Image (cartoon, rainbow over all chains, first blue to last red; front, side, top):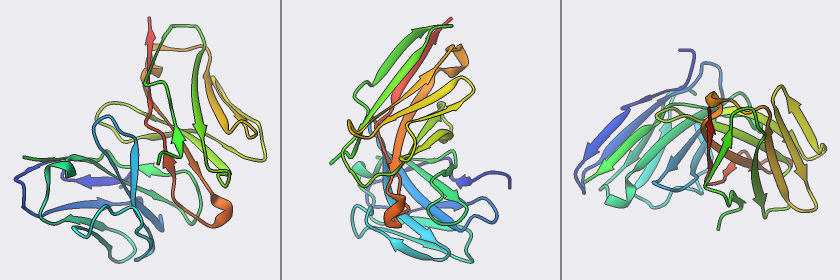
Length: 114
Length: 114
């Protein structure tokens, strides 16, 4: 597609359940990022992929969070045993090459944990 | 620890006047700065950037100024238009270190009054 695509756009889940969020980056973009924005907060970096490898996972808040990327394209962010504090908008972005600076964002996946 | 700070959560400006959005940073390794604009229910979109080798970059109605000694940058929009009403995020990266992560501020909500 022309832009970064994320699904689902909205997800409501019960505390303790696992969720998967999907990101389909712009074709040809080798770098992929996950950020999240909690209510009233800025964008918080979670993880960065270059190709299929994740050289920077420093932003993942706990071991309940994991992400993978396959085929240098689609990425999945998985949150296990969700907690209420995980409620946020999860944003995926992609860019062409390394250190390009300008990221292209998807519309985000809004996660609500009840 | 917020490395990029936007201390004004909101700003209201009359249509046709100048909007000035401010951003401060703490990390002296940051060498590339960007402004993103975000409408409700959409992902952030890139607006304008500046490298640390410059102190000004202009693109149409948008100008970004960088004061490295003060670790401060600002975005000027002139003349402001109602369509500029959005949340503006300042972001910074340390490209010279090979890092790919962007650090974002918490955003400033601009309202342009017709």
